[in-house]
Length: 243
Ligand code: NAD
Image 1 (tube, rainbow, N blue to C red):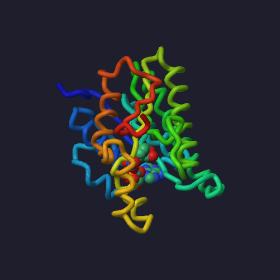
Image 2: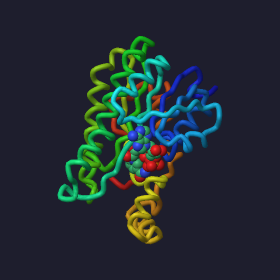
Image 3: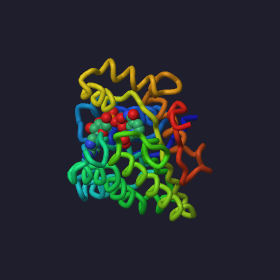
Protein backbone atom coordinates (compact mmCIF):
# COMPACT_ATOMS: atom_id res chain seq x y z
CA UNK A 1 0.00 0.00 0.00
CA UNK A 2 1.23 3.50 -0.80
CA UNK A 3 2.54 5.23 2.29
CA UNK A 4 0.70 8.53 1.70
CA UNK A 5 -2.46 7.25 0.00
CA UNK A 6 -5.37 9.66 0.36
CA UNK A 7 -3.25 12.52 1.69
CA UNK A 8 -2.82 16.02 0.31
CA UNK A 9 0.65 17.54 0.65
CA UNK A 10 1.89 21.10 0.18
CA UNK A 11 5.62 21.58 -0.36
CA UNK A 12 7.48 24.91 -0.54
CA UNK A 13 10.75 25.41 -2.44
CA UNK A 14 9.95 22.32 -4.50
CA UNK A 15 11.67 23.39 -7.74
CA UNK A 16 15.08 22.06 -6.69
CA UNK A 17 17.04 20.12 -4.12
CA UNK A 18 15.38 18.68 -1.02
CA UNK A 19 11.92 20.13 -1.79
CA UNK A 20 11.98 18.73 -5.34
CA UNK A 21 12.89 15.23 -4.15
CA UNK A 22 10.24 15.47 -1.43
CA UNK A 23 7.48 16.40 -3.90
CA UNK A 24 8.57 13.51 -6.16
CA UNK A 25 8.72 10.81 -3.47
CA UNK A 26 5.43 11.94 -1.93
CA UNK A 27 3.65 11.73 -5.28
CA UNK A 28 5.14 8.25 -5.82
CA UNK A 29 3.77 7.24 -2.41
CA UNK A 30 0.26 8.19 -3.43
CA UNK A 31 -0.15 11.72 -2.09
CA UNK A 32 -1.84 14.47 -4.05
CA UNK A 33 1.05 16.94 -4.10
CA UNK A 34 1.02 20.70 -4.66
CA UNK A 35 4.61 21.76 -5.34
CA UNK A 36 5.33 25.47 -4.97
CA UNK A 37 8.34 27.69 -5.65
CA UNK A 38 9.30 30.97 -7.30
CA UNK A 39 11.17 29.02 -10.00
CA UNK A 40 8.45 27.85 -12.39
CA UNK A 41 10.93 26.19 -14.79
CA UNK A 42 12.21 24.06 -11.92
CA UNK A 43 8.65 23.11 -10.94
CA UNK A 44 7.99 22.09 -14.55
CA UNK A 45 10.73 19.42 -14.25
CA UNK A 46 8.57 17.48 -11.77
CA UNK A 47 6.42 14.66 -13.18
CA UNK A 48 3.05 15.87 -14.40
CA UNK A 49 1.01 14.16 -11.68
CA UNK A 50 2.50 16.75 -9.30
CA UNK A 51 0.46 19.95 -9.29
CA UNK A 52 2.55 23.12 -9.40
CA UNK A 53 1.92 26.69 -8.48
CA UNK A 54 4.07 29.76 -8.01
CA UNK A 55 4.41 30.74 -4.35
CA UNK A 56 6.91 33.28 -3.13
CA UNK A 57 7.01 32.48 0.58
CA UNK A 58 8.21 35.97 1.50
CA UNK A 59 5.21 37.58 -0.18
CA UNK A 60 2.95 38.67 2.70
CA UNK A 61 -0.48 37.14 2.31
CA UNK A 62 0.43 34.84 -0.61
CA UNK A 63 0.43 31.66 1.49
CA UNK A 64 -2.92 32.52 3.07
CA UNK A 65 -4.40 33.19 -0.38
CA UNK A 66 -3.06 29.87 -1.69
CA UNK A 67 -4.53 27.98 1.27
CA UNK A 68 -7.85 29.71 0.71
CA UNK A 69 -7.89 28.59 -2.95
CA UNK A 70 -6.82 25.01 -2.29
CA UNK A 71 -8.43 24.14 1.03
CA UNK A 72 -6.88 21.98 3.70
CA UNK A 73 -3.71 19.87 3.40
CA UNK A 74 -2.77 16.88 5.54
CA UNK A 75 0.94 17.51 5.08
CA UNK A 76 2.94 20.74 4.96
CA UNK A 77 6.66 20.68 4.16
CA UNK A 78 8.50 23.96 4.64
CA UNK A 79 11.69 23.70 2.60
CA UNK A 80 12.38 27.31 1.61
CA UNK A 81 15.55 28.67 3.18
CA UNK A 82 18.34 31.16 2.61
CA UNK A 83 22.01 30.86 3.52
CA UNK A 84 23.82 34.06 4.36
CA UNK A 85 27.52 33.27 4.60
CA UNK A 86 29.57 35.17 7.15
CA UNK A 87 30.00 36.17 10.77
CA UNK A 88 27.93 38.75 12.65
CA UNK A 89 30.41 41.39 11.41
CA UNK A 90 29.67 40.45 7.79
CA UNK A 91 25.91 40.56 8.35
CA UNK A 92 24.26 43.90 7.59
CA UNK A 93 20.63 44.75 8.40
CA UNK A 94 19.48 43.63 4.96
CA UNK A 95 21.11 40.19 5.22
CA UNK A 96 19.73 39.77 8.73
CA UNK A 97 16.21 40.80 7.72
CA UNK A 98 16.27 38.59 4.65
CA UNK A 99 17.37 35.63 6.79
CA UNK A 100 14.63 36.22 9.37
CA UNK A 101 11.96 36.79 6.72
CA UNK A 102 12.74 33.83 4.48
CA UNK A 103 13.84 31.31 7.12
CA UNK A 104 11.36 32.14 9.90
CA UNK A 105 8.57 34.61 9.09
CA UNK A 106 7.59 32.67 5.96
CA UNK A 107 7.13 29.51 8.06
CA UNK A 108 5.13 31.46 10.65
CA UNK A 109 2.75 32.68 7.95
CA UNK A 110 2.21 29.41 6.10
CA UNK A 111 1.82 27.32 9.27
CA UNK A 112 -0.67 29.85 10.65
CA UNK A 113 -2.64 29.73 7.39
CA UNK A 114 -2.55 25.89 7.23
CA UNK A 115 -3.41 24.94 10.81
CA UNK A 116 -7.13 25.74 10.96
CA UNK A 117 -7.85 23.48 7.95
CA UNK A 118 -5.63 20.70 9.30
CA UNK A 119 -7.29 20.83 12.70
CA UNK A 120 -10.77 20.81 11.13
CA UNK A 121 -9.65 17.71 9.14
CA UNK A 122 -8.72 15.92 12.35
CA UNK A 123 -4.97 16.44 12.14
CA UNK A 124 -1.89 16.67 10.00
CA UNK A 125 1.89 16.62 9.83
CA UNK A 126 4.11 19.68 9.45
CA UNK A 127 7.78 19.19 8.61
CA UNK A 128 10.08 22.19 8.83
CA UNK A 129 13.55 22.05 7.32
CA UNK A 130 16.01 23.55 9.79
CA UNK A 131 19.70 22.56 9.71
CA UNK A 132 22.35 21.15 12.01
CA UNK A 133 23.77 24.70 11.75
CA UNK A 134 21.36 25.96 14.42
CA UNK A 135 21.02 25.12 18.11
CA UNK A 136 22.32 21.64 17.20
CA UNK A 137 25.88 22.76 16.48
CA UNK A 138 27.87 25.83 15.51
CA UNK A 139 29.26 26.19 12.01
CA UNK A 140 31.74 29.00 11.29
CA UNK A 141 30.53 31.81 9.02
CA UNK A 142 26.86 30.91 9.28
CA UNK A 143 25.74 33.55 11.80
CA UNK A 144 22.34 34.69 10.43
CA UNK A 145 21.61 31.24 8.99
CA UNK A 146 22.27 29.39 12.26
CA UNK A 147 20.38 31.95 14.35
CA UNK A 148 17.28 31.70 12.17
CA UNK A 149 17.47 27.89 11.80
CA UNK A 150 17.62 27.68 15.62
CA UNK A 151 14.48 29.83 15.49
CA UNK A 152 12.88 27.23 13.21
CA UNK A 153 13.53 24.58 15.87
CA UNK A 154 11.89 26.75 18.56
CA UNK A 155 8.93 27.53 16.32
CA UNK A 156 8.55 23.81 15.52
CA UNK A 157 8.57 22.71 19.16
CA UNK A 158 6.12 25.42 20.13
CA UNK A 159 3.57 24.50 17.43
CA UNK A 160 3.99 20.82 18.35
CA UNK A 161 3.26 21.52 22.03
CA UNK A 162 0.28 23.79 21.39
CA UNK A 163 -1.55 21.44 19.00
CA UNK A 164 -0.53 17.95 20.14
CA UNK A 165 -4.04 17.18 21.43
CA UNK A 166 -5.59 18.21 18.10
CA UNK A 167 -3.85 15.64 15.95
CA UNK A 168 -1.14 17.97 14.70
CA UNK A 169 2.46 16.79 14.57
CA UNK A 170 5.24 19.26 13.86
CA UNK A 171 8.83 18.11 13.46
CA UNK A 172 12.13 19.70 12.44
CA UNK A 173 14.55 18.04 10.03
CA UNK A 174 18.18 19.10 10.49
CA UNK A 175 20.30 18.11 7.50
CA UNK A 176 24.06 18.34 7.42
CA UNK A 177 25.69 19.26 4.11
CA UNK A 178 23.57 18.06 1.19
CA UNK A 179 24.55 18.16 -2.49
CA UNK A 180 21.87 20.45 -3.95
CA UNK A 181 21.83 23.25 -6.56
CA UNK A 182 22.13 25.95 -3.88
CA UNK A 183 25.11 24.18 -2.32
CA UNK A 184 26.74 23.90 -5.78
CA UNK A 185 26.21 27.64 -6.26
CA UNK A 186 27.91 28.34 -2.93
CA UNK A 187 30.83 26.11 -3.98
CA UNK A 188 31.12 28.02 -7.31
CA UNK A 189 30.99 31.33 -5.41
CA UNK A 190 34.26 30.40 -3.68
CA UNK A 191 35.96 30.66 -7.10
CA UNK A 192 37.15 27.03 -7.06
CA UNK A 193 34.20 24.62 -7.03
CA UNK A 194 36.38 21.50 -7.16
CA UNK A 195 38.55 22.51 -4.21
CA UNK A 196 35.54 23.68 -2.20
CA UNK A 197 33.73 20.40 -2.91
CA UNK A 198 36.75 18.44 -1.68
CA UNK A 199 36.94 20.58 1.48
CA UNK A 200 33.20 20.14 2.18
CA UNK A 201 33.50 16.37 1.65
CA UNK A 202 36.64 16.10 3.80
CA UNK A 203 34.88 17.57 6.86
CA UNK A 204 32.22 14.84 6.62
CA UNK A 205 32.81 11.76 8.81
CA UNK A 206 31.42 9.58 5.97
CA UNK A 207 33.67 11.33 3.46
CA UNK A 208 30.73 12.40 1.36
CA UNK A 209 27.86 14.87 1.28
CA UNK A 210 24.24 13.91 1.82
CA UNK A 211 21.89 13.34 -1.12
CA UNK A 212 18.61 15.23 -1.38
CA UNK A 213 16.69 11.96 -1.75
CA UNK A 214 18.09 10.76 1.60
CA UNK A 215 16.63 13.84 3.29
CA UNK A 216 13.35 13.39 1.37
CA UNK A 217 13.05 9.82 2.71
CA UNK A 218 13.12 11.13 6.28
CA UNK A 219 10.59 13.85 5.42
CA UNK A 220 8.34 11.20 3.85
CA UNK A 221 8.49 9.13 7.03
CA UNK A 222 7.67 12.13 9.25
CA UNK A 223 4.77 13.10 7.00
CA UNK A 224 3.31 9.60 7.03
CA UNK A 225 1.24 7.85 9.69
CA UNK A 226 4.25 5.60 10.40
CA UNK A 227 5.59 8.57 12.38
CA UNK A 228 2.40 8.94 14.44
CA UNK A 229 4.35 8.94 17.73
CA UNK A 230 6.90 11.66 16.91
CA UNK A 231 6.28 15.36 17.33
CA UNK A 232 8.26 18.39 18.48
CA UNK A 233 11.45 16.51 17.73
CA UNK A 234 14.73 17.46 16.09
CA UNK A 235 15.61 14.89 13.44
CA UNK A 236 19.31 15.21 12.67
CA UNK A 237 20.39 13.70 9.33
CA UNK A 238 23.98 14.61 8.67
CA UNK A 239 26.20 11.56 8.14
CA UNK A 240 27.47 11.92 11.70
CA UNK A 241 28.74 15.49 11.29
CA UNK A 242 27.19 16.81 14.52
CA UNK A 243 28.05 13.65 16.46
P1 NAD B 1 17.98 24.41 -3.23
O1 NAD B 1 18.78 25.60 -3.42
O2 NAD B 1 18.44 23.21 -3.93
O3 NAD B 1 16.52 24.82 -3.60
C1 NAD B 1 16.02 25.98 -3.00
C2 NAD B 1 14.71 26.32 -3.66
O4 NAD B 1 14.13 27.38 -2.90
C3 NAD B 1 14.89 26.83 -5.09
O5 NAD B 1 14.07 26.09 -5.95
C4 NAD B 1 14.45 28.28 -4.97
O6 NAD B 1 13.81 28.76 -6.14
C5 NAD B 1 13.48 28.23 -3.81
N1 NAD B 1 13.22 29.54 -3.20
C6 NAD B 1 14.12 30.50 -2.92
N2 NAD B 1 13.49 31.58 -2.44
C7 NAD B 1 12.16 31.29 -2.42
C8 NAD B 1 10.99 31.99 -2.04
N3 NAD B 1 11.07 33.25 -1.59
N4 NAD B 1 9.78 31.38 -2.14
C9 NAD B 1 9.71 30.12 -2.61
N5 NAD B 1 10.78 29.39 -3.01
C10 NAD B 1 11.99 29.98 -2.90
O7 NAD B 1 17.77 24.15 -1.66
P2 NAD B 1 18.19 22.97 -0.69
O8 NAD B 1 19.67 23.06 -0.52
O9 NAD B 1 17.55 21.71 -1.04
O10 NAD B 1 17.56 23.53 0.68
C11 NAD B 1 16.25 23.26 1.08
C12 NAD B 1 16.16 23.54 2.58
O11 NAD B 1 17.09 22.71 3.27
C13 NAD B 1 16.49 24.97 2.97
O12 NAD B 1 15.64 25.38 4.02
C14 NAD B 1 17.92 24.86 3.46
O13 NAD B 1 18.25 25.88 4.37
C15 NAD B 1 17.89 23.50 4.10
N6 NAD B 1 19.20 22.88 4.27
C16 NAD B 1 19.99 22.64 3.19
C17 NAD B 1 21.23 22.06 3.37
C18 NAD B 1 22.17 21.77 2.24
O14 NAD B 1 23.33 21.46 2.48
N7 NAD B 1 21.73 21.84 1.00
C19 NAD B 1 21.67 21.74 4.67
C20 NAD B 1 20.82 22.00 5.73
C21 NAD B 1 19.59 22.57 5.52
